[in-house]
Image (cartoon, rainbow, N blue to C red):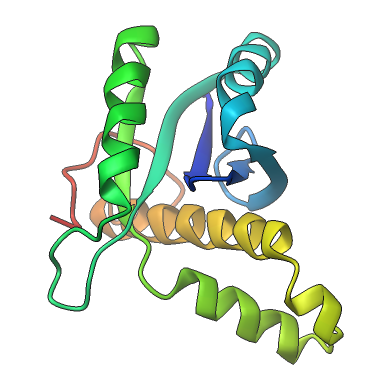
Length: 156
């Protein structure tokens, strides 16, 4: 069973998170500059068995795609060509940055740490991945079986 990698794709940097091999726990991997993401993915996929990626889907309050989608879409098209056998899922990422900042505040993190955009992006990727895992477990009636089975895009 391969891992699931989440990407909070941004213009400057991408937050990353990954599951354990059993797909139970989502863990932050950190961030990578967007321009270096392809090199990171190539290296990571050579070292780890990744079966699926989950990419945040930025939306406006009325569910329309946000303007950020205009630079995520080319990444997804290029990814599909580079890794045609890899499943790609999308998860609504609204409020993940706010939730990440609130989590840091509740943990007692200082102002400097709460303003660290790389840390917020990494936590946001973890939240995206946790959301996906929860959707998968509900979709499959998860009771010990594989939560990473094919899903319809529930956020559409």
